[in-house]
Image (cartoon, rainbow, N blue to C red; front, side, top):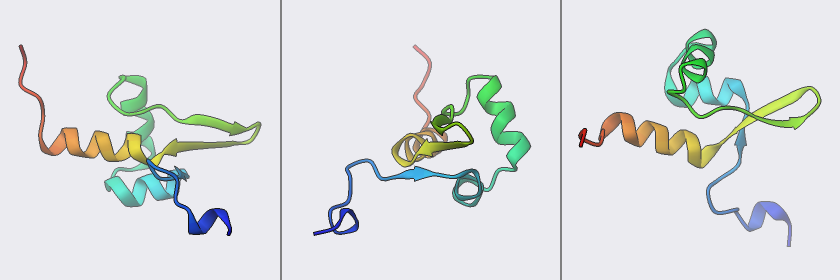
Length: 71
């Protein structure tokens, strides 16, 4: 069987266009939030390719919908 038939828990790596589509944020806003440590950082996949782990983006989205109250 191929990899596509056995999904990896947590999803797949998303390219920046996928992250833009998932979040509705602009490219500049995504990188601004990363700099502010308010968005999951990208991971280097190859010398010229970065991606975001899908589960990290989903967790970020869920935290925006249901923020944890301050202690």
